[in-house]
Image 1 (tube, rainbow, N blue to C red):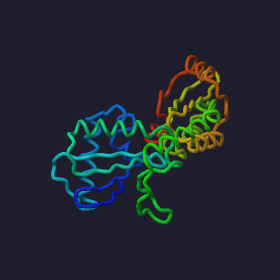
Image 2: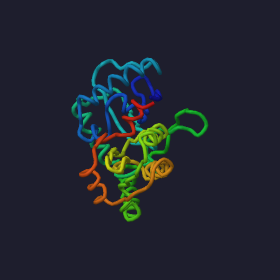
Image 3: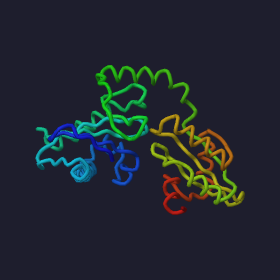
Image 4: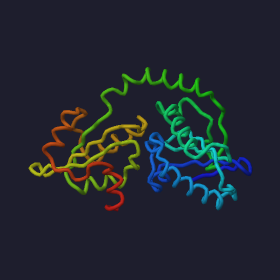
Length: 248
């Protein structure tokens, strides 16, 4: 977590993928307005903010604004406010739904960003939400055809050792559904990766990394369905992150 103090009643917090995973929360939880999870995260943030930047809320009602950032980070702006907590969560979830139409980093937003030199946080220009949505929708139209057919990929590994080596060198797979299967007769392993909210650049990087440790098989859903039906499932989802924990 990175913090920026604005004044005595307002601060910003930048959360990365590890922060979200450590607190068992995802963007979907914001979409669903999961009050319990968001409230739990907020408690952690307030405690860390007090330690990091010496800011302390009075325990009353607060205002919460969220904005998705580059590299799958999230910016939260927290301040003393007048909304009830349920209204605050509902508005935060609506803001996330409205703005995360695609990767936001190409369009810009009212955010703080990491500077190239060091980890200092700076303010970025404000872009009206209406203009931002228009930019994102235009981008979606241009890239829709390019992304078609690139949402799923299947790779074959000759041994479990090769699978483990890949998992150790692969970044955490936020925004990807990935599963691992074993083909008993062929004595090999199949890794199926499906892009959900992951950026195209990260998805392509992981696919390139997969070719270093395994062999590309197909991008057809029919092939994936065949493997799911005829092979033994070892890890149904989040395969890389699970193997990182238990195989390193």
